[in-house]
Length: 106
Figure 1 (cartoon, rainbow, N blue to C red):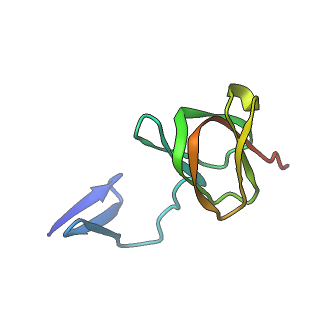
Figure 2 (cartoon, rainbow, N blue to C red):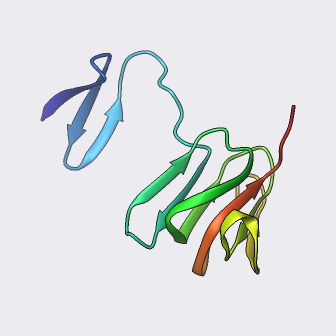
């Protein structure tokens, strides 16, 4: 068993590959996550408007924003719509997406 500190404030307990944060409440993760064609996990926090999908979005996508996310095959939210994820939805997207449109709220 090992205890690590993340950002020198939150101790993390690692047991057999499972991590548990302890201590005061911790910050939530990104509002929108996807696995890119570069095999890396990418995350966006509080996205608004049209956002480029770094790494070429594809595969597993999770939308925990308050609005729908529309995935486009082309850059700058152009080209064919390859999917739309409602708030809280998780989906597998194939073949890929290059940009995502999020609602712009004041």
